[in-house]
Image (tube, rainbow, N blue to C red; front, side):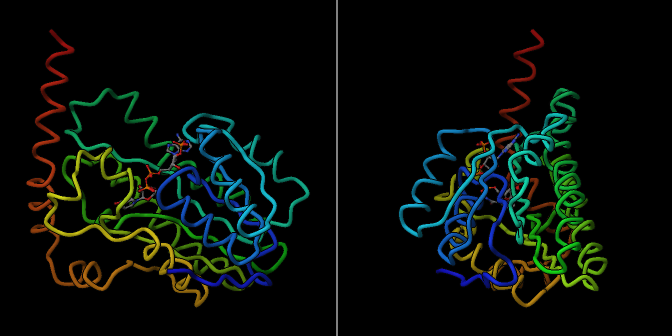
Length: 274
Ligand SMILES: NC(=O)c1ccc[n+]([C@@H]2O[C@H](COP(=O)([O-])OP(=O)(O)OC[C@H]3O[C@@H](n4cnc5c(N)ncnc54)[C@H](OP(=O)(O)O)[C@@H]3O)[C@@H](O)[C@H]2O)c1
């Protein structure tokens, strides 16, 4: 699946965070395929360079690489310096990660760091590029949230709460930026087939639902932005689940799904305290 991105509205340059793998890498590919130059952001410089090289060879677009840790203070300075002089029309605020495990089993510093990555980084990007985009009176931002985040997710409490912030921010900015001709869409995926699943301790082969293909997830996100939809949950089955399964049942399902991972994390924590 391959979206066509309107180069006039969303070009000539796009910034994609978390471009080194998974959903961000696929965004980079589909955006570059429409002839839009790409700025790839993430920590793993070699992986970013590989994705960038492939896009340039295949689609003849230019690229810039920004190797930064979005959970650390001051990362925005590097992004601002690298994008100075580029006419940015599209921002994909995607970088993030989730680890399953019980809240109290995790060190407070680790939780704080992840909160910075999964919420504050979106704020920083939206504030800087929001000004640029509304100033040029065209363009768009896609924020990547998560399907069930606003309902509370046991064994992923902090990461899901951060995604609830992203959801609320995106929905509000959708309205605020509308008069300036800037489109804002929240892409709220359900389980999607990326390395992010392994980080959660989930194996696609043993999950109750087959995870969504990453190209479909990205295609639906870009298509929703083109129509300036405020929010898209990719996949008909995900949309149905989200509409009909009560939040309490969903939390019970999540507890069951992550129980093994939580058990493992508890064992690790007790091992550390011995
Ligand atoms: N896969 C799913 O089932 C699913 C479901 C709902 C929502 N999501 C969301 O989708 C987004 C993409 O996840 P994914 O599934 O594509 O996972 P992924 O393959 O692990 O990709 C995560 C990306 O985020 C970047 N990243 C992580 N920590 C970073 C940091 N501290 N600083 C800069 N970049 C960082 C990674 O790049 P580096 O390692 O190079 O830094 C990587 O490119 C995330 O926001 C995730 O929460 C995923």
